[in-house]
Length: 371
Image 1 (cartoon, rainbow, N blue to C red):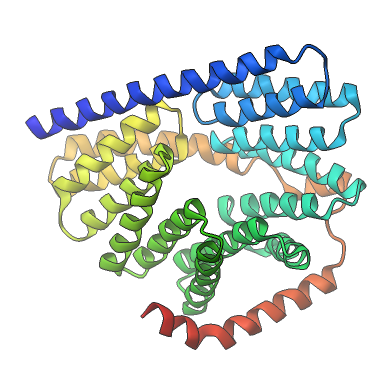
Image 2: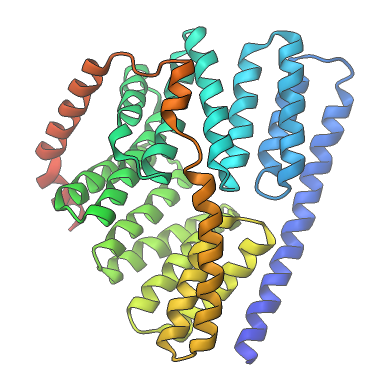
């Protein structure tokens, strides 16, 4: 009981500190926006910065700011501002699990980028579309969007872009490894994670390194190597803690709890799951809340507390039904009917084949590096 009290107290204390910091940042950004007396591109950029910051905390206000940036960009005929506004809106909706609207806004950003031949923007749009289709919706036949993005980022020698797409492809193959249980997908996922780690270290990019370590922990968890999964999730947690990235810390804590659950440390796992659940309810983050509910249901069942297990599982089912309706409500074929994304299919096939061949060549080197 005392231990549980400490957890609740620490959560409330952390929330108070974060809220005070957030208020200061938001107030500062709003003052900067008010200082811009004329409607120009500087105001658009500051509105987008504010919206990006608010998307994790004040969803509705984030949407308002992004829409203001979009309207002003249209008024100024500032196409890059329009693109960034669409991406900003999409990110906010994606973060709150509204994949239907997120996909629509990512697609609008793609259309503008394609019309002005902005290759870096096209690569980013393809990455976003591919992530939702292949990873959120498990539509594995649409992996061409990820490979198209990889081709463009490679051509442009875009390091941040390559970091994103390596992580996306690694996560995509990790998902397939989990859902289809094929060893080749584990090998491909490991290869792209290794590429991401090497690139992040070469750039001294701590934030990206933390994300890659966390995803690598997921991969080893699927392989039931809970010791290695715990090792990488703890490394990820430590990095996100230094970066004051609370949302990522919660995901790491959830994953550490899952490793404890599978290792028989059920009561320790329950403490982590309750902590994660409370945080995500408070910040209205549905995806992680769903995972926490499922983990709690399993944990209470293992503890023979069937009443708690049933209540948490019922809440899990209700939330999952809500999210499933949102996740699968958009058909990419409907979007493509208004604007084609199906160009250069032969080139995409060749590119995928080339990358898979390279994966096979690198496999032995990867295992040597990791093991």
